[in-house]
Amino acid sequence: MNMRLSIASIEVCSVVLAIALAGTAVVSQNALASETIWPQFRGPNGQGVVPIDLPTDFDSANNRVWTVDTVGAGWSSPVTANGQVWFTSAVTQEASPEELKERLAKLQLADIKTFAGSVEFHAICLDSETGERIYDIVLAKETKPEPINPLNSYASPTPVIADGKVICHFGNYGTWCLDCHSGKELWSSKQVVDHSVGPGSSPIVVDDRVILVCDGIDQQFICALRMSDGELAWKTNRPPLRTNIGEFKKAYCTPLVIDVAGTTQLVIPGAQWTVAYEPIHGNEVWRADCGDGFSTTPMPVYENGLVVISTGYTRPEFVAIRPDGSGDVTATHIIWKNNRSVPTMPSAVARDGQMYAISDSGILTLFDVTSGKEVSRKRIGGNFSASPLLSRKHLYLLSREGIITVVEANPELTVISTTDMEAPILASPAVIGNDLIIRTENQVMRITAQ
Image 1 (spheres, rainbow, N blue to C red):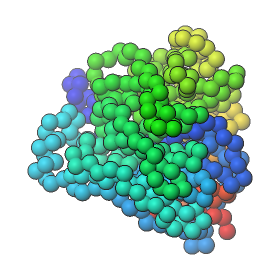
Image 2 (image 1 turned 90 degrees about the vertical axis):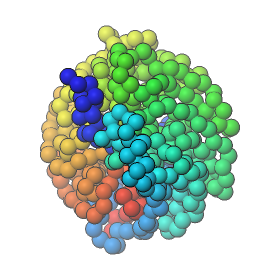
Image 3 (image 1 turned 180 degrees about the vertical axis):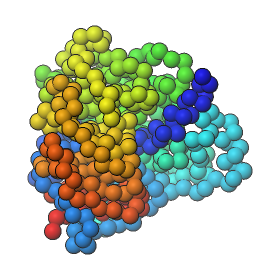
Image 4 (image 1 turned 180 degrees about the horizontal axis):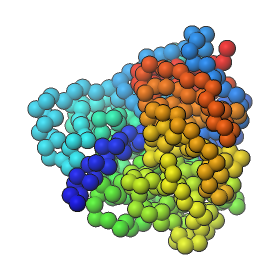
């Protein structure tokens, strides 16, 4: 088989689209406050679950608290805290046809890549009550940007808010720490790997560490920057991989922070291996060989004492791992696997021993977490990259076609509403109070119940 064609056929299935879209950030385990601080991708603990009721009607103008047009483009998800909504965006200028042809001619997988002529990287802050723009901060400009998949953006990783600061990450272009109150830049840093088709993993904050996942086609490592000054605190290489092909080494997953018997772990799936690290020094706690997957994107789920990960391309599986081991736990701590309708882009959500997963092609499946067995399934239709949100009663599914589907969170998986937002949605939703923050291709909006 021609390996170049094989890889291209895999990637054209939108491997990078997953990058952002699962896209992400995790803070240390904050409680869900009454005002519902949502400082990271998938909420305070990175699981996308809230014990409250949320709006189910998106059609009426009465549901829109505010709607704001975005600047540029980006698939990073909104984050909220202290009366602010932050997100990132990229303002691009097109490359000339001659420049595009010349640069693509030098690349592998050129048929699934594109370039911008130049890119400005923006951090944007809105007032959460009014939608008024507080800041639109241009962090940097790149005149020779790297390639991305045409379905990806130059602003895909989700920011993270911690201790009155917001961390905005743009992969190789840099990581910036801003003061939320003043918008002042406190520090910036660069950790460079070859992402091949653009960055996707979002930063997380644990104590005074900003954790970055750098799983490129050239090198793969995890590192931590000091929150105080952005200096490198530690750097840990990923386990050796069973391939010499760079495209099979990359991954785009955001870490999940879990507590195991009073010890904090960073669980970070990558190509082939899922590894847990302790966050202060970056030491490896355990590792599990999950097969030959790559371009791994969905965040793990932690439920009923099991970490459940998706292995990514080319044949995704859910793998459930007990996280109480040390060293290589492949033979002892992998509890079950299931390869039916497993997403490569959206993360799953879980509660009360049950896990809901929407596949990239719109198959919604309910699994029993303890056994890995399928409980029920339903075809929703559409194509999905954004991660679902689970409220007290409902599951929220946001498709790339811009359809929001609300499903009852029970084995019947009854669809109770569908709304066409008339613009693509690849960013995952955020929660503030009992309201939703939704980002479409060209707008950010706050939606409330009537």
